[in-house]
Every structure is written in C-alpha cells, then in structure tokens.
Amino acid sequence: MSRTASPTAQDFVPFATAALDFHRALNIPGGPLVTTRAELDALHAHLVAVHGLLDAHAVRTGQIVPAEGDPLRAARTRIWQAAEHLHSAYHAAPRPDSGEVPEREACRAGLPEGAPELTICQRHQRTAHLVRRRTTPADLHTPFTGLVRR
Image (cartoon, helix red, strand yellow):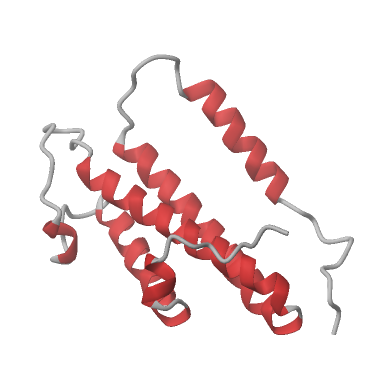
C-alpha cells in the first residue's frame, strides 16, 4: 500500500481555490452587502465538500501516520463548525420573496421552507450524521484544536 497519493493524479484543489478567489473578486463588491441565501447555500455546500475531503484524508492518513491524522481530524472538526455557522446564517437571512426570517426551530421540524430551500437542511443533516459517528461531543465543543507549537 502506498503511503502517498499518486504523483500523476490530477489535483483539482488549486482550481477550486482559484475559483473561489475569482468568485469573490467578481461578485462581492466593496462596501456593505447582505449575503443572499443562495450564496450562503453555495458556501455551505462548499464547506461540506471540504469536510468530506478532510474526512477522507483524516481517516486514511490517521491509520498510517497518527501524528498527521490528528491535525487533519481537528481541521475536519473546525470545517464542520464553520458549516454549522453558515447553516445558521442561512436561516437568519431574509427570504428572497417576502423578506421574512424563518424561526430557528423550523429546520429541525423537517420541512422548514420546502424545496429548493430544504436542500441546505438535507445536506446539513446528512453531514451531521457522519459528524456524530466520527466526532465526540467534546471535540465539537472544545476551543482547543489539538495543535501544539514547538
């Protein structure tokens, strides 16, 4: 079993990073701006994808090199926490059609706003299921990231 990824494998992460930088430069003007629900949904989807990538790296690397796996698991946890915040921000943002802000409990009820708005909640709940299997409550609530300065 190889301990490193294939050097010939296409690395798309730099392209994703460049796309985010390009998106920010083109679409986020200077000055005050209220983030739209569509933007928050897209950012949430992006963080959930990054969480999945870090999860895969943490699980595989942690089996071979635990000292590298621990910081990857901490990064995975912090990305999940960021996704939690984005999910909350989405529900705090006004609805585009009415300007109404839904109640926080609406998401937990299962059908807070109907399709397509429900997709962020479905994605969040699917990922939360994985988080509950791979992370302890203490990991999710500790301010310590597991990183030690040397």
